[in-house]
Length: 242
Figure 1 (spheres, rainbow, N blue to C red):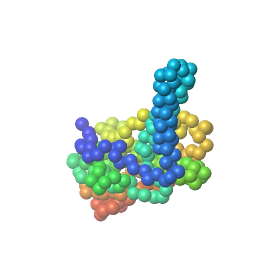
Figure 2: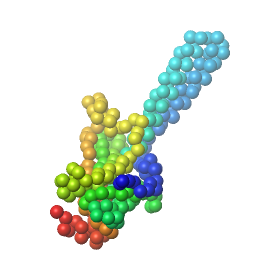
Figure 3: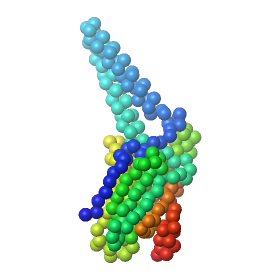
Figure 4: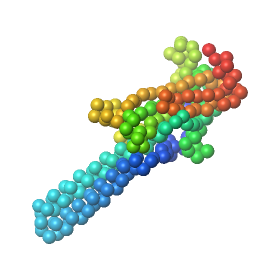
């Protein structure tokens, strides 16, 4: 059965956007709301201690609401951190292949955004490999505030050159991103009309042949994913690709 062979690092540890001061708004909002919530709750306890039930109830409600707002901001921040910031074409990582058998390859995916030894290994079936990502672009005024285009790797899969094999042969598809409690992508899709700072949401994918010993460099820009051969085996595979 095709399977993920090893998982050297949790995907969550691979998400390290370098936020500007403008994008620190959410963490600051979390801290302020949480602090105010605690202050109001302490005030509520003080009011109840002094037998001022109405003031205590009002302060308690305010405190609970502020802490709830802080929790929502925290979930939004967690969802946003699953995306990488993208201001220009940058390295995503490298993928290398070794043959296991006919139309069967071990794929070693290394991520540029994490420590050098971070990566995952998969078993892919087929003639070609494909990697998919989600891209979220902001409008110009949001870019001015420091919000760059975001991307998140979604899937790695094997694909067959022959359409009949693609329909009938074993398929291998692996998820590269963990599920989020609050998914920024889904929120942006659902409330697109209410979010004027969102410019575009789209998926991007690139695919190239698998070959024994082949290595490919993967990059991403605002226009999407790009994969390029990085050794002779990969150049040979793509040179005769049809």
